[in-house]
Image 1: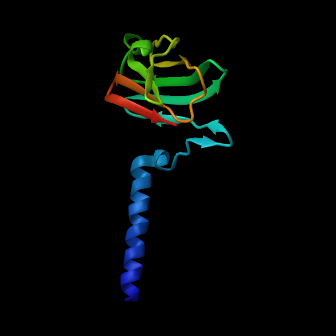
Image 2: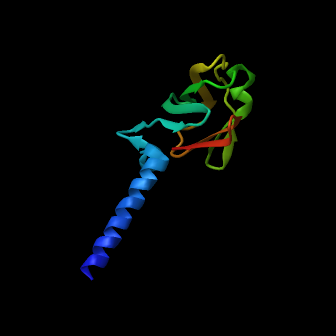
Image 3: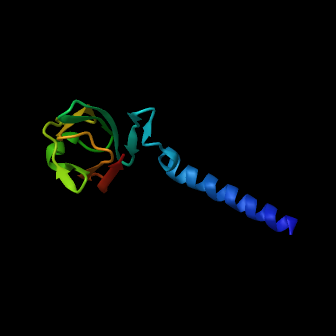
Length: 136
């Protein structure tokens, strides 16, 4: 009986360790800490990091960093490829940075009438992930 419990404990330990290795910090990522939204990452041949910065009463501003060593980023228009979803409504960005080269950053701005409690940003068709979903 004791060996069985130890075996189950070791199995659970290795499964959790495997999940952490496979999914990294995303598995344990906190969405909000001390009232601040946390950075979320999507990594592949093009890595994208999003960090919600602030809501000024009419706009939600989200910092974006895009990095790659394999494709030219200027072919992707974030205003066309990005949506924010909250409370059953969908919003396109009113401003988005122009991607260039292999490393770009800037801010996505979404016009909202109130600060969202929860929201999702979806970015489509940037290699090699057809649909990137970031939720807070």
